[in-house]
Length: 242
Length: 313
Image (cartoon, rainbow over all chains, first blue to last red; front, side, top):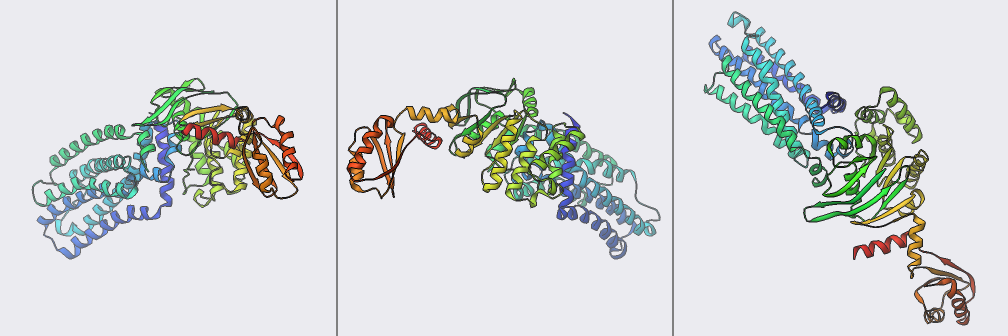
């Protein structure tokens, strides 16, 4: 597998994405809006006690993991089925590129833009949260080890999982809308974890718990890579899709 | 350059391509004619290593179709114009070609040179920075042709390249194919357009799931003519063909179908060179006045229709 080929495909997709303003707005507006709104509510409206804040802050940060999985959907679900619908998949498949190179290229193009958006959004969230809670807590809550695990491990792994689920779905469905609807289901496991945190079934402020979730995600991501290769069938895509 | 032996493709119980054996030499323009569903696109997809073959063998430039490593080598060797143009509408004409040039491992210098050359040849250079999505159908088709040539392939597969184009755009594409022919490119042309096949192709294959005939357009016409029945004499009369003339002509031995349209009379004859004297005598006897009488052989259209109908039955 030649990474250069994958990068050519990803670079083309980035160029195309720049023209799709609606997707770009969705991608960048939501994380930054949340980064501003939650600190504003917590700091100036909700009047939480320091003890409550220490519980809420890691849970809110975990919200960015859900967001990462969600934001991958509009781009990733479009990757293969979008090319098919626009009839550009056949000439692409006729070039000397392998399935793995195409899938990796599509994966990169669906991974990096949402990653930039959620990293930027979460960084702003932590900064504003620190500014609005310092008086109550007496110290800057972020960054800490837990937030490092969430931002540097959980967030990219969750995004990668969502991208792969969406690419697999995209290479199996026949229209973009179905792809997006099915691909959005990748968010559900992360919402489950978030709810479990809210219901005190799991402590998302505990580093060991976060590391266990990260390890599980890593295993799922590796498995999904092989599943995506196995389910990408050129012939089926070209001959069975209407 | 292209060789297939008993190439077959089945989709479940349906046989899309049945035992196609053909050989196309380097520099040859080969036209693949056939009705919808005859297996033309499936054959091209197999040869372009886009779908697998069920049985038989095929090779391009000595590389075996269906062999993993050879598939990548074949894809480097060929250019492909699919029946749908499949351009990236948001990208400019230049960026569309540049993207494919990179995938084919062309250097930056090669890409620049080829993009400029083909866009100029196809009259699109002035629009090189315009998004492909704004192009007319004809311009998009020309851009798709340029895309297939960006890496200077030795073999070009074109699937209905002039379908749905206006006559002027179709002519530009056809003229361009003739230019490529001069460059000794091997071209495999799927088409419905008999006139196009006749003008552009060195040889023609007629497919109806099975390959039912191959040859030059002239060979195919001659083969059908010598088979009897479809050669005809076209007689132009000075007046409208009357029922008396038609009745007299139909009485003659060895006469096939007789049709009349205004002052034009078409008479199918098994051996017009020998029968024309008797035919002319019969028309005059029935009161007709003849302007001219011309022997017409089978056209490619006659050949195509006859073979496809026979193939279908």
